[in-house]
Length: 192
Image 1 (cartoon, one colour):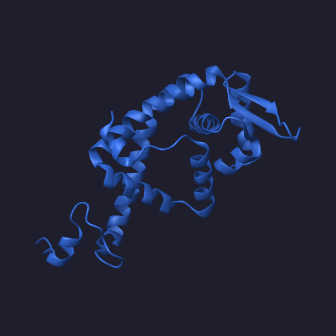
Image 2 (tube, rainbow, N blue to C red):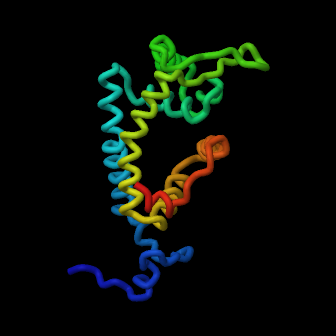
């Protein structure tokens, strides 16, 4: 027999209604948390499937995609900054970055103020590949945002930020500051 909904709780869960602290904590049950893990797993799997196909044709993988993404988001990023964003070792980055440089997707330049620095930027070939990968994922995000609506999009952003540790949040803030103004959730949900 299904549980009877508490009318007081049901009123707090109406679409768009704010939920006060300590109210309706049903989403914190273990099964709901496991469902959240399932959603993250399956969402990520399908979100990355299109780019994975493109990358596989080129003999690349997700690590290459991450480098292309973040170098494309921050042209002139230092190797040290990229290491901080990716949270990997220099050796791991070198295994991914070296072929990207050798195949002319990424260019390294000597730092202007510190000659020990290596500044990374995408070449036109790298920009074209990064754009192709982005466009495959853009369709998934736009569809999901349109289906969910602006309130859910803002909730999603809050949840994703909540999953990040302090260093990841700081990295995200630096990326947001370096990027053009972000469109509102409402405009993203409307556009296609």
